[in-house]
Length: 168
Image (cartoon, rainbow, N blue to C red; front, side):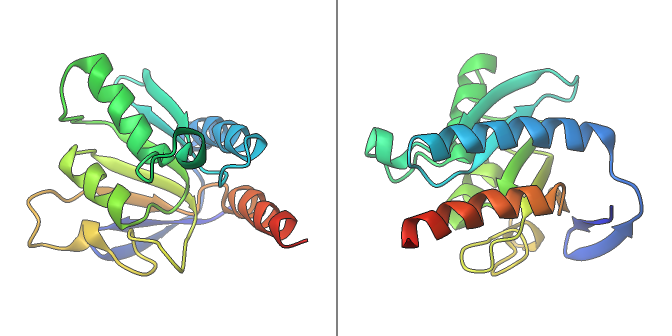
């Protein structure tokens, strides 16, 4: 399987997928399915320390918590920051099933996450290369590595099936 590494506005093709990326994305997919079971938009996130320790697992809870900011990414960042007692999450990698929105990318950048790995692109809301590319904006004081397309098919299928079921 092939995926793209997007680093500061440049795309690079890679032939083999990093096994760790697959492992952690599968955990994010499990989280996304939890959200779907609660009638939430099925997005899951996993934040991992440089050491490989999982700092947080989360999924969308916007409806459950009646909180428009309760996206999987924001919840994962909050949980991890509380765990490490620091709002700066240096050296971490955030795995998300769907490309983050503008709100989430802003928080990811503020938290100084080193790498973002996501599954499916979001052409309507994506802020990591699809619609916007906040991480490549040189005016910001933090740039990160972005890996896109990890388990893209599985991630896309979960969200497409969710919205199909809502329309029927």
